[in-house]
Amino acid sequence: MMLSLRDLIGQKEFWIFLFVSGWVLLNWPLITLAEGYTWMGMPAILIYISSIWLVFIFALYLFDRGSIE
Image (cartoon, rainbow, N blue to C red):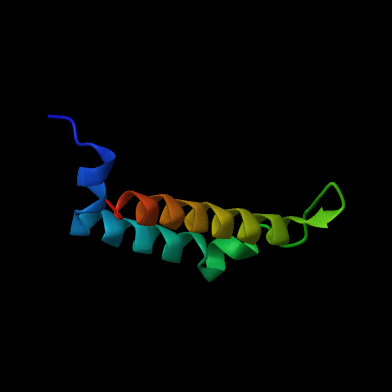
């Protein structure tokens, strides 16, 4: 049985998974992996944190937009 995106958003387990994955990705050990590296002149830690932050904001926007109806 296939779940649609609307069914997936309504499940508590999915929101718990989203929270835990955000907590793990922005946790201290993973952030220190990018320490000391640069990419195109920018610190890799800045790129890592910004990209994770933007992905979560985009996901929350899509989920909020889908729950209006």
